[in-house]
Length: 302
Image (cartoon, rainbow, N blue to C red; front, side):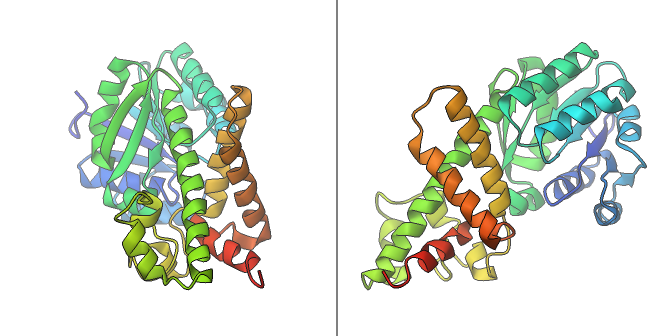
């Protein structure tokens, strides 16, 4: 049984998501050995009560569970091959919460098992706010036994933990979910701009659509225009939140999966193109809901 009394956690990747996740584990009583390449992340982790170590290998060597939150599949695989797996005690549970390609997730799982360990992929949804509040949704791929071992820790960091299937299937769920999110945000943003053109106030459109068939998370929780949902990034000059660059990354993973599996996913592919353009034109550091500003700009004079 995974409990604070008998479990030490190595946490590699203490950025905007990983840092708050590790902090919540500390609050729950777990000993967390944290590592990140960024000095500022290590400084914050120390303030949050984690024990900072000098390398990822050092974190793994003394841990019962190793959690990684990294930018890409290449980072995960390179780290696994670069000494992380070799440094860990036999039977260590590896939980990768990065959002990566399904094929990379399966490769990481195979590497961990071949090295004598256990592994699940457990990407998250909920953004920085969810990471801080401990309300993330975890989509988990791996064996039933490994899922059960990971679940007590995931329950600390999240409000919803779903076992989606075997290795890599957690990533599949994340990619599909975020494809819906990206498409729906574009659709809602286009609707707001069209409403503005037609003389409809943003509040009036929100009041109608939030109680009608247009209701969705992109509208009612993450509304892309200021006013209707005070907690949305639109009310904070579109500071992320969930940055456009990250949305484009996830849509790129979805686009690759659509092509690789022969799916006629025209909206998913076009959403990736739209967010890529916005990212390239200086929107990369803004929240992904700022796509409404790009749509409005391109609609001027029409």
